[in-house]
Image (cartoon, rainbow, N blue to C red; front, side, top):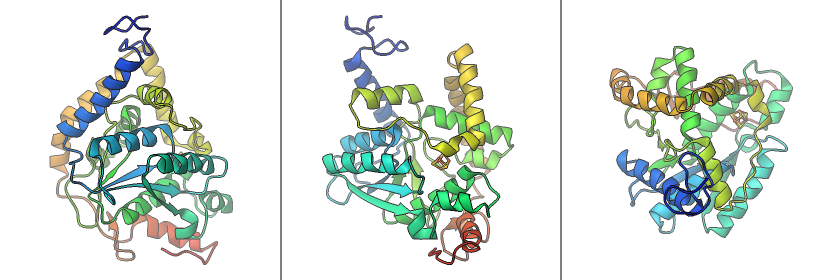
Length: 306
Ligand code: SF4
């Protein structure tokens, strides 16, 4: 198959583009998303939530390219959950990437903050929640805490991630959480909450993997071993099966969702995080999820430092 813009061989079938034209198509899509949804301004202090995987490495590279940051304006933030054989590898790739690209990297860990790695928390069997629920709650807490002083947190969520999130919240009838999704998360600016934005919102997982591959980013394409236990994995499989039989289904979900999103945000504009009485971080309950989990972790360890 030939590129629809020149006579070179295409690296992707839909749209049919060669390497050169695919890279500009991908970068333009990200840049257009940033501008259309006013995700990042050139003067923002930006913290990029990074894992060392393809999505967050791609977004980190593109944010640096977009910002041309001054010293102290851009920081990569890695939350090391402590997942042996997985996070240690991606962290190594990320350290190399940041060092080669002169990007400041901050690392915060579950072990340093809560006294235990995720592996140890799961092994203790004391918390009867799915691995991703524990991990997501603690990770979101640490991201917000360590991004204080920055204007925004950029995440590497792509179109497929968002499709899964939309479907999961629909299936669970969590309309209020649904209203917090979108290229710019949350309902309105809240004290203590660092705004999160998703520049890869309209880029598919496949396009992002191809971009990372063609750019020669030294990243691992392995998945976290805990994903198989998650609700997300089931929804992802369902969506992938549907997409393979009905091409364009995921794009359709995102386009329909984004049309309805302003109404949802308006409907829930009065709700949102208050402040946790224990740690002072944003929370929808009196005590935030991370503090509740920290208390449970404390039952098998007395080294929690939240
Ligand atoms: Fe954490 Fe689940 Fe993601 Fe693994 S798959 S990093 S456990 S949220």
